[in-house]
Length: 236
Length: 236
Image (cartoon, rainbow over all chains, first blue to last red; front, side, top):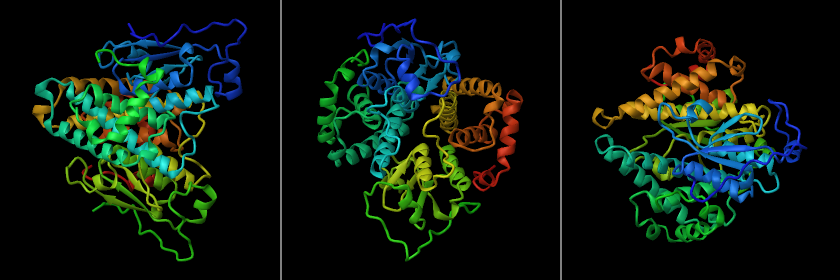
């Protein structure tokens, strides 16, 4: 169902004790409990899911996370009973909490893997600025994708044009700053990749690579990483 | 233009030295430079703007932040030249960075005011779960507001129904957890207030207070705080 297999069965080690629910997540304790099973509820096309699945792969945690495909935006969707927001990605933690929002999930994963965190806790101002641009860019792309998939009689030409213009401004800003095109995939750069991948595959913006050639080179390099190859959406 | 006056002119103290751009935001240094002028670009109806404006008021920083109303979603909007995402809220920092996204802005404000941070850096799992519900709830409300304001021939009855159902599930979940209805307005609770305020004023959901009576009591208490009263949207 998931194409390239990303998740694995959670290991079940009887030597590990299960922590009490509502325990504060303690980094040393969580290291000790590496056998906690984690479940990630996904759709295969959400760019936010892509961010989290790539983070899991980059952190070397694929074997610890079972990936479960669900339907969203349907009244009887199974995700609605798990997370009242009905959104993906949703991560079910080993002690029974559900976590929504890709950034919160990545921060939680960091707390299990502190050596090289995906989400910077105390970024420099330039990095805060960069993250604000990237998350606004990605949110705009998500709006554009949803608009594009509406029935023709409910589609807004104005919103399609707005989102294209927003993407163009963001591409121009980002292409002019090659110092930001770092190889290390932290949270903002995972969001950037997910946004560009939607542009490259599912949005009517064939010439974005001509518009932003330096960014397109970064995108092409990242697209070859195992974390990107193993989490590609189907129908590409 | 801004109704209740929230911003003040930035103080200009010649004794304070201006830090070099690209300096890492240092907490002690930022305390020293309390005269830095900050500008917040807003629309008066965005629930995300409400979150940041209330955070500024709760932190006692209203005098330091000039609030500037701009137009969004127009090709020649002045915000597009400031922040390529074209989104509000956008905060312009004293050393010339623009920060988008309400959570990033609140974290930046915290770095200027470390005593009682709005954004928890290392939340317990229950608090991560709560923040995920709240931000998903607020994002759904924002989608609902945008859908509601589309011309009738571009509106999707399906999306309106989905967003109402999402809001109902979130209300039910939140109303069943009165232990979360804390008086202290941290980032998730500011988002909760902004979401409920949109339900109370601008969305066709008149009976939400009957559906979620405990939450409605919390909302009514928070609505009386100066930070809420002084940042109310017009036309209410």
